[in-house]
Length: 123
Image (tube, rainbow, N blue to C red):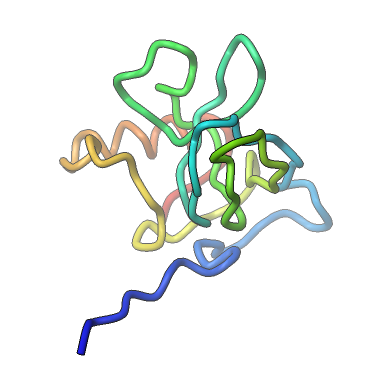
């Protein structure tokens, strides 16, 4: 029997957030990003203002971690509307999805510092 892996659930990473919708924004994940799972760390593409999974090797703005994706979206063939946490919240470090290239503690610390600059505190 094949092992099953449970996907991240909507908002699973949240420890706390500001009252109302202050911590959340509606955004777009850029077409071509594929299926992007809830809890994925995002960067913002400078030219379009759309979001993509954080990529430390990128040069389009998505190399800077600025938000966390609230719920899974499919941006395979078209931009996908989504909800992100972009400020004033605390998130669980163990629930976040990092870029595969972000695999050392110093690299993760740099991502956490980038998120903290926007008021997203990783605990």
